[in-house]
Length: 251
Image 1 (cartoon, rainbow, N blue to C red):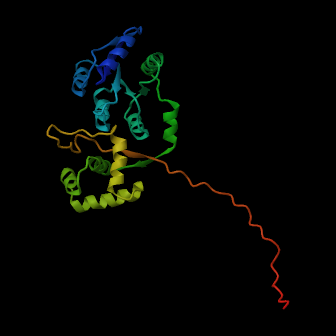
Image 2 (tube, rainbow, N blue to C red; image 1 turned 120 degrees about the vertical axis):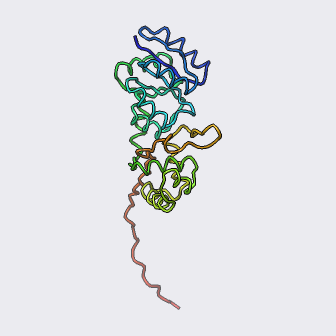
C-alpha cells in the first residue's frame, strides 16, 4: 500500500483530488496538510511513500532542501499551475521526482503518481526542452549564500554581518558575480536569484524580518535563460553596374 500525503492551501482543490485518489487501488491517503508546519509534523510522525506538494508561496529552495534531508525515503512531486525553468531545474537537483500540472486530466494526474511511485520520473517535454534552452552558472558556497541574501533585499552591510565577512569583501564578491553571471547590477542579480530560489516570494520571520543564510541555503548554481545567438544573415555579393565614364562637356 502506497501512503500518499497531500499538501495544499486550497481546501476545495485538495478535497477534489483526495476524492479521486481514494478510489485508486493501492493508495492510502494520509490526512491533508494545509500548512508547512503540519506537513513537517506529519512527515516526522510517519514517513509517507509519496508526497504531493502544492507549489505555494511557502515552498522555496530552502524548504525543498530541508525536505530532501527529512524525507530521504519519500518521493516528492510538485503540484503546480506553473513553474519557472529555474526553480524546476533546482527542484530536480534536490531530488524532486516529478512536476505535475493541476490542469491535467485526473487520469493523467493519477498516472503521474503511479509512475513516480514505481521509480520513474514525470517531467513534461516542454519543461525538459526549456532546460536545454537555459545556461547554468556554477556557484561556490559563499557565492550561493550571497545571492540568496541579496535576493531577500539585504544591503551590503547586512550581508556582511550575516556572513561574518567585511563589507569590502561583499563588494568584491558582487563585482565578480556580475561578471560571472553577466549582469549589470545587483538588481539584475537579485532577480535571477529570486527565479531560482522561490515561486515569487521569500519567507519572512514573525516580525517581518527576513530569514538569514542559515534558514536559506546557498544556491549551488544559477539557471539562466540562454541568450539567443545572433542569426547570421547571408549577404548576397554586391553587384555593380558598368563603370561610369567621365561626362564630356559638349558646350
